[in-house]
Image 1 (tube, helix red, strand yellow):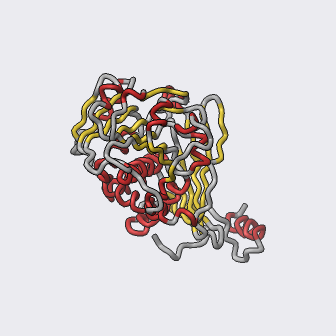
Image 2 (tube, helix red, strand yellow):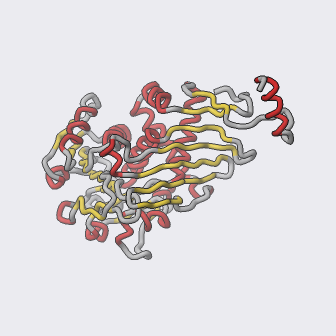
Image 3 (cartoon, rainbow, N blue to C red):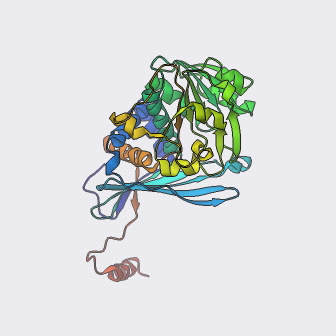
Length: 352
């Protein structure tokens, strides 16, 4: 990336560029490096502006804005969640985001974030499991085999050393799709006929379903000692995946409590129910897993700092690799006070 760009030019990463960039870096390398940047930002958690995401909810889904700043850079993401979209051939989740310079307010990057969100969600999940799961974990069950599932599987292989994945989805075609996509990943993949069968013998259980409802994907009797649960699907008010009794047996870890208590699994619990923030574990100010048989639960809803990290990482890769378009996004008059004069000069130049 040319650091001497014209002031009106903003790098834009399209879906095509994102796919090419991920493949150029390598999917596993991309996920490992992204997880490292997320961990770096978690270690400086207290520097960031933090607020629950701003949501506009409807019966069909939600549209959200997720902003944050570390005082030097500002980032935000626009993201939707509409589970019914798949019926019309659309994605359940789409997103785009921007990174800007706090000092002058100018955007520094505009990017698609549908793919990037899937990558950062998987990287965050695996990062949390590396701090909370048993170090000898080798088998993961994934309940819900939609758009996020392959990213989750590959991230856990790359970051946690998972070797085998057990799949279940109420739609068998989704599991078959996931198994096909993972066929060259080096993971041993098995499709199971039920969630009960999928979690049997699993060291880590990831739930990543899409329906916006109070659901019981896992019941208490399905969770044995020592399991780490990565609950990803519950990410808005009125949407959960775990039976309440599982929460009461688990040590619960979250990203940002004011947001998770609204959107996560813990919306089923009293507002003062004790939870531990993941950044505290990463920085060593709180303990993660206390013993081998403990059940740990990462109640993940996604937080703006993770998107900030993803945009920050993406910009660093653009400086190495390129793969972006130049958008003429910002007005850049010769005299900053003469915006209208720029319009008049354009009129003369174009003969309008």
